[in-house]
View (tube, helix red, strand yellow):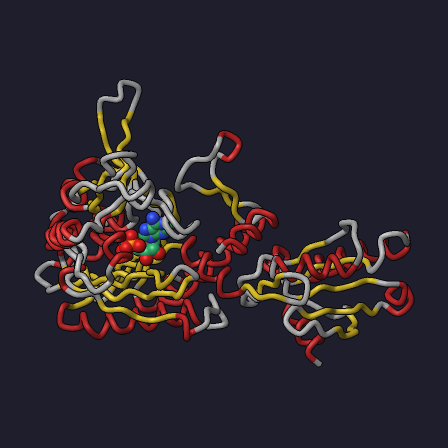
Length: 457
Ligand code: ATP
């Protein structure tokens, strides 16, 4: 993790939030490469869960981060969206109680609040219920802390509401807007949404794994109740495909597992849930949850009948955090070459697929030719996304140092321009994963895939 964090800062993927003013716990800012990587993740999710599923009935929504307080009352978040925490009697720091119990003894059940209180009492009796931050001071009994972020609206600040802790509620409250024109809606249908979510986490931890502000990617899939198990299994498979397939996030499948929740572990709205977990350097952690929310939310907002009439409906929800997925991908892709790190990100995820550079910096004709090769390639590329994955690198330093830098940021291929390019138009392409260099011609290239194909010959 230390290596991942250092690389993220050094190369401009992720910076600590408000660093200039000493930092703000649980917040991070994304630099140029982080923006590109996060965008690749979110666009890939959108293509698999929205665009390619439109023929199944998935539509798009972008609802507000701010919604009426009543939304959170009705959804149950005001009453139930809480985690157990314990205060240190000495340093006053607060600890997420169930996480501490899991660390101390992972055989003790602490799915419900009552179980957490009992487990803490048992550990206290053994003298083990102690503050993890200061020197073995006793911890208080667990109590519930609501994770909603309160905020006040308008110049008089008279109306209080909350930043959304999940994008899903925006879908439920918009169901009559999305579907009312069509009469009783034929099942199944889905609504896909990506956007910011906010949780006042007790202990933000493990870099961007648990933050107070993060990007969620969620699908609400409404199906006939009798088909709920079939669709639940279908969306678990789609999530697995998304995180493991080389076309998408390319995580090592042996480091990904599916964990089905025990009834006691379920969120207040769920009747079943399967998590996809990744083996992070700090242990297994949730990447994504696929919950069966039944008709809980539709009934809570009283929209079930208006939209689905008398049909028996269940809502299956695959929900992922983009930054958690990014952390898993960075951990998974990181490797060590002789003297430098290398990020072996999947082809569609790397911020730069092709970097064009001169072999030396002190020959004006080579520099001019490099800019010319870049310009003609940029003009020839048909897809705008390809253009975003193309970079002109005129930075100083030896070619070896540049290759090492591009390995570290995951650049798939480096195209080097030299004196021969000035004579016959050929360039050298170095591949990140093999280090192999091949000579190719760039005339006729219309996509970055064409470059890869030419370099593979
Ligand atoms: P955890 O048990 O880790 O707190 P959760 O079960 O509360 O997570 P969900 O409510 O299922 O999480 O949220 C769906 C997804 O949103 C998670 O699988 C995760 O990828 C992401 N997510 C949730 N909380 C955070 C957070 N604080 N920081 C970053 N991503 C998060």
